[in-house]
Length: 180
Image (cartoon, rainbow, N blue to C red):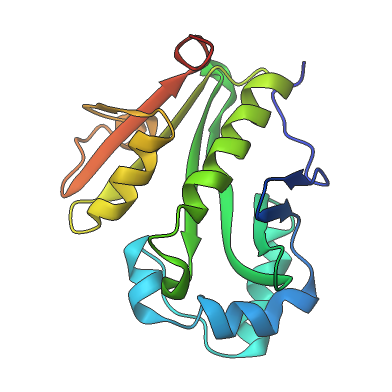
C-alpha cells in the first residue's frame, strides 16, 4: 500500500461525490463558500472573490491532495476536503474541510469525512489522521468527534513548529482505533 492517495479517486456517499477539482467548479465555489468571509475564516483562509483568484488557487490545489465536495442532488460544489499536511515519516496526515454555511448542520461534512477516513485507512499506508479547529468553531469539533476523532493535546503541525496550539483544539484517530 502506498502512503499517497490517488488524486483521481472519486468517493461516493448517499448524498455526495468527492472528486478532484475542475475549473468548472469555480462558479459554484464562488456562490457557495469560497467568497464568504465567515466560511473562510472558520478554517483560517481569506475569501477569494474573483474567478481569476479561484482559478489560480485551483492550479495549486490540483497539485495537492484536495477533493471537491459535490452535492449529488444539485451537482453543486459546496466545499472541499483535503490532506493539508502529510508526514510520511510517521504515516500521518492532517485533514481539513470546509463547506458553505447554507449546508451547515445537515451532517454533510461528517458524511464526507467518514468516507474520506475510511478510504484513507483502507487504501493507503497512512496510520493516523489528525485535525484541529479554532476554539470559536465548535461545530467543527462536533464533526470530528462524530467521525471518531478524539481530543489530543497536540498535532504534528504544531509539534513541528515546537509550539503548543493556541486557541486551537486538536484531534486524532489511528487506523487501529478506526478498526475497533
